[in-house]
Image (cartoon, rainbow, N blue to C red; front, top):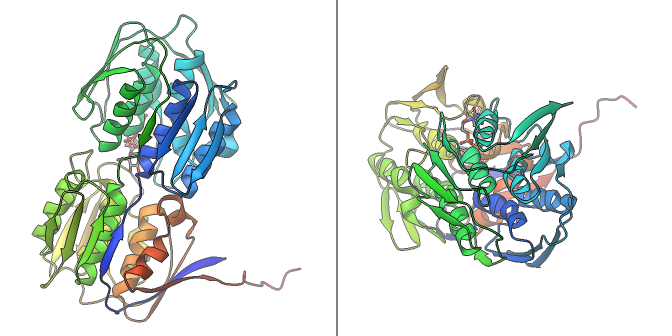
Length: 427
Ligand code: UD1
């Protein structure tokens, strides 16, 4: 078993560069199905989830070549299957992003019901309702979703109950060739949606309004392959900004658009962090106590749920009491019980966490409950007294490239350690 071991309480400072956004790269990879031929994706993070999406595409008949560490060349001309197996979808919920492109290209798709990060039910009913409005028929058989559009996809107006990122993306991709115009009302506005629409438009699609709550997709004929660079990862960036904020010494985070972290940076300033914004970087430092503030997670441009755990870590050390309200995912407070083991004082009440700031944290053995919670526990370990050991780090590897090495480059005393599997005396 591999764990991350952190010795807290040492100075941490320097500059770190983030990779391309996981949440964009996965959808861009799926979108290559729409443009038969060789698409080159640059600035792709070298993380486990990207490897899973590569396997999904290969399973469908694509060729995925690693050109260099951050460049993939994906040839989708020979894609000849529309079935995504459970073994892959169970590993990563975002595999369902192939549903839309497969429907657009073949008029049919079979996708297993999703698994992935353990943060609640994470249904896909909005994807299904939206696609039904475009003429797609669904059948569920032995846990597989069978989708088909026997009469082709036809543009329609879809109003989402909630600005779901995944549903917005699947609907955009499904409707690029649909007859007429598709309107997605109450669409998600995340920067990753804009990145997807930009690449599809470069491929010849006609998508207007990405980044606003109303997106219009005017159906077109064939798309052509392109070369496209993935947008910088605002959540990886935000995680390192939070690291700078918790340790206090200056940390510069490069390779992303600070506007994509707008509300996070403003909230962090209210907490007493000093943030200097550059064009593609921010520098964070802190010379005073962390002030208590309340936050609530919401779809973009609201406070991202993917920054909730890292922010809870900062607030666990605030001079007072704060309330964090999680509006996007259920079960996203699992991280709090691990942080309690490090001496925090957090009371969970439904989808609210009441965080009573404490003077300091102490090192402990903790378990990474999910991707962002795992990163946040490492972050807590950087300021805790003594050694913190974080297990189940495969969650962190899903979304952070060289997380430990990047923290080492900031002088953190941190390493990955292989520990023997416990011997229970049973042969
Ligand atoms: C994406 C991101 C994830 C981020 C989330 C919200 C990827 C790979 N993941 O996830 O990191 O935390 O956006 O910013 O891009 N829901 C339904 N029915 C549906 C679809 C969603 O009930 O059909 C619910 C979900 O269970 C969840 C909420 O809506 O409670 C938001 O989900 P959604 O925005 O779709 O998130 P994902 O696309 O899964």
